[in-house]
Length: 339
Image (cartoon, rainbow, N blue to C red; front, side, top):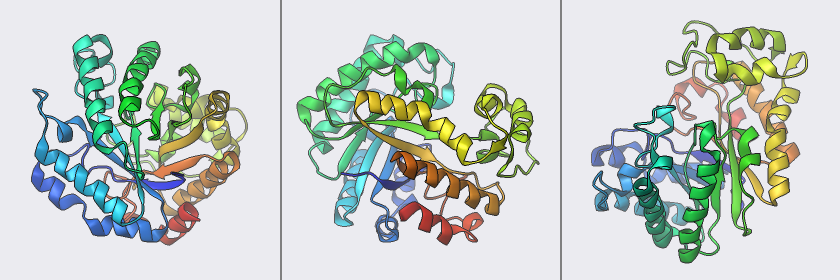
């Protein structure tokens, strides 16, 4: 299983209204076929815990049936699928710093529930040859590095009991930062893939994003340009703009993006594992010509370091590839993403 070039199906079974009507209407088998026909080799499927289980911990059989159906669709279309636990009971990357909502790492009961859920998922899907498993979308807090390693070890033990060879994907902390893969304990088997997410410079890829604190809502941010331009703008979004603000050089472009992946490349080589960018993309508020230039640069970097990747995202979610904003550049994007 290469997992070389993929696209996320965000908003389908995650970050959505968790109703059977939504699950039925948002994605169809034709969407899977379309992605396969475009030339992608896999789909990353974000799934919130609500699809698998009710709040009381009992299985959500009707939700699970939609996962079953999607896995079958992918097999029929000859395309691989990454089952990504996007939100766990007791942990949601959207609740950064909220100790009451994000208490997974400090609760034995919640850790057991997390491991038990992966016991179920790996037993049900882990022996299907076109399925890979991703443990948790994004761990946010820097203080959880050691606790995350402990939870990975406990979870891997049950997965390997059920599915000794299934590819398992996981990343570091701080929203899957490339710079935190070095904090992971190197895996003991060969079927692990390190992942990171790349949306740099954030002031460009997330321009006008309503959910980013301090982000101007009426400012078009260009790409590429002088790094001083991004440093100044990145001050508006504080810590989230640190990558652009602290980078070396005079220009924003391939050299900057290459710098952003260096620590991830080193960590994956040291651990002897493959490297995968599970999310990257540009918001549908950015100028399309500049968006295409960013994709041209990031694809050069991925090719140089043999980084496999998965675009965020197929539909809606402010990044939807099939949505009207990308009409002028979609064919060029697909050429870059699937070559």
